[in-house]
Length: 419
Image 1 (cartoon, one colour):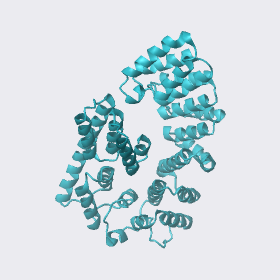
Image 2 (image 1 turned 30 degrees about the vertical axis):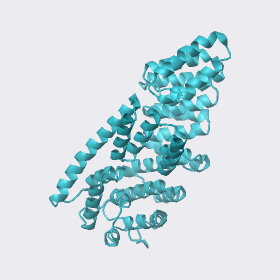
Image 3 (image 1 turned 90 degrees about the vertical axis):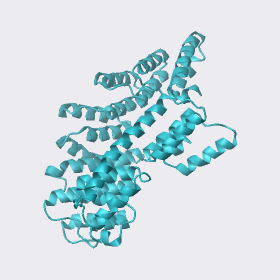
Image 4 (image 1 turned 180 degrees about the vertical axis):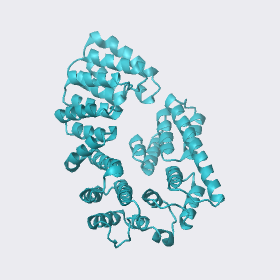
């Protein structure tokens, strides 16, 4: 059920819930909390609140994670209510809607479509009445709104192409970039004015739409055409960096390192000319996935030379790379660097270091790392605890350590640990 919820497969989750109930098993606190968190992430706040109420009615005691999920729901609802109230007031007053306001409202409404039906209808109405400023970002969000008429789509060529076929829009844009502004078959996406900025905005919006739709190859084709046409220059350089970061990150997450490698050299050049933690983080994740310790060290040195501070994701990628190679000393040093930079222990980093310690037969060190993470409020995963206890079990002198660790697991708020 947890795997189905994480991947957004609600029907599959309901199937497993039915099987669970048929077997005479009642959902526990962890199951209720996971469902509520998934519904909150999907913007289905009313259903999430109903799950939490049913949890209390069934006599299941809420955990700390349940309270955190409820607070996140209230915070998101409060922010959305403020944004929506201002938007409704502007529409009622007949004011024009700026691109920034439209993207802010559309982002909140699309995150919770069942809760924001009226606001989505107002967004469609503003597009129909042509009260929204022209922007590629507006078109990319408007393509996800239901109920747009053909007349409203025809007034915005990029929106029309994205609604009809994102891949076709990508190929048409790539052809226009090759021809540098000649009229396209689907209409001119390249507005007059600041030509380079317009190119960069349009390419960025279309590439992100293609990545969301899973058209990685088409997005790659558009990025190649944009760079051949020297689109990402001057003020638009940061957009080119962001597009490449998204493309490389998607390829690495999909395990397609060969495809990601085609863009790494260009991303390295962009990271040197416009340094950012996101760009260097993508390079670190690629090197860590390839288990190339030399490349990880080289990227780390370039970050330090550029004066870019590493975020938590950069540190975790570095720790994972050294731990996968069984380099205990280097993994400990990377973990210490993460703590020295002011980052709190993270469950993934703790798990990687513990695995490396256990493989090197340093069970005591692994237990020390776990105790330190617990003191700093890190939610250690059940697999990390189980790994240490399984290595301590054959040794009678370590049984007392198992008892102490299991007692801490029972006191943890996560119901998975008790099971």
